[in-house]
Length: 338
Image 1 (cartoon, rainbow, N blue to C red):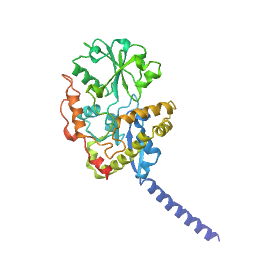
Image 2: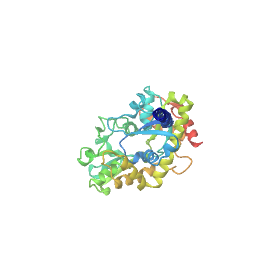
Image 3: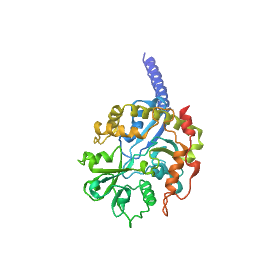
Image 4: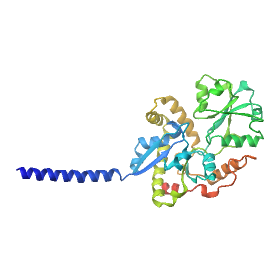
């Protein structure tokens, strides 16, 4: 009996050990993907959180880590330091980084419209772009300044001479405190912060970069060029895109549901469902191909238009040469479509 008990225990231990190895192998079977966002958890990134929450990544055989951004986090630096497989970034910053030696490649363009705008108080005397001269304008830096500087060059305004730039934090205080005539805002976020602070929409004047003809592509997905030489990486990212697009389609279709998921993902507890639903409703306007087979597809004409805008900045262009088709690929999007 004693010998039998020992044998049974030994056999059980062996079985458990094998099961443990098998479980471990199963757990590691999912392909790991780390995505670095451009900012903190909010509806701007709802598609990724929805895909995660609804299990779309898991169904695709992926173990996805979503890393929030912040005021001191540069997606370019993160991916250059091998801290992420893919990053969400604006094309001006991505192309500037590519020219500076960080070979980023666009694999998908989630937002096909720009949400960037300058928001001004009517009381500042600004009613059209010609009124910018002599005024203080709030501008985000960290890669977000490029579209603005290009626009000013197009208008013939020289920073420091014709206009004064206030390096704006990621808040709307300069407008509320009358430190600037206009500030940078996104239609889905900061613009509404101004309104929520008590400023009537009728007291504001807005200038959309899209309408002014100086818009550049914003939230796209970028990877390092060298990794695209690996077929396994392309296949893995294809799965990531397919699941992500599914998440975005759901978010656009159900802003309220997306808002709940985003709020749940915000560990700071500062996000509210009401604000995030409103944000998602405005984000949806920037993804005009949601629900179609073209979601996430980077139109070559849109890429070329953005490059043209960035090159046309007078003596201080965002980029000095056309990066050509090497700066984007449809290979991963095609893999997702399959």
